[in-house]
Image (cartoon, rainbow, N blue to C red; front, side):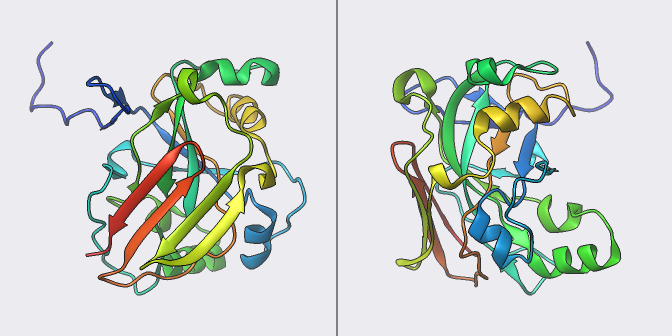
Length: 228
């Protein structure tokens, strides 16, 4: 096959202990999936149907790389997240078998231009400029589910310059990962290479140039980036 110009490289994530890399198809993010975070954002922590937004696959920042402070904003927030990576997909996936589609897990940051998000909410507009900007998704290498299992509890945390900002537990998720996969597959055809950022606990706050962000999920791994 020939192209009118060379296609962009396939976005990938590392897999711990392996040379082969995980090719990324789409990045889905679920909103307000921890009760305390829903409250701090002025939302309802009850189990309303989950809602999703997307980031471009090439918004990923590889493990340990710097996060460039983005343009057109003065209020960029951190959101630490447990990330699931799929090796298969489909439509209308049965919740009881949803985890069969998971390759492994990682830790990510959903960086958000909060001022642009607030403006979009006020005007009833999409969140793309707030959530889907370039390099908005630092992410760790992945660990295979065959090695670590399927975590449904465990500490999730984030520090900024060594001080704890966010802390919670995966057991606090309003919608579990099997529920998210099943519901999401009614809206989109899920495919191998899809990532699901599963939501963030309370404590989101602004970052400044020079800040060092480090976060993790117990038994899964850590992500680290510096704001430049």
